[in-house]
Length: 35
Image (cartoon, rainbow, N blue to C red; front, side):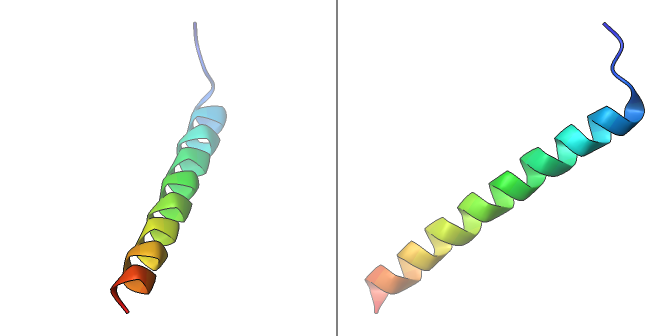
């Protein structure tokens, strides 16, 4: 199964952004619970 490079880059970008979003949320929760 061949996936075009553009699609692969978009999928990688989306998963990266989603991970970034969850990282930001967990960081906010951690800092909020500390204070």
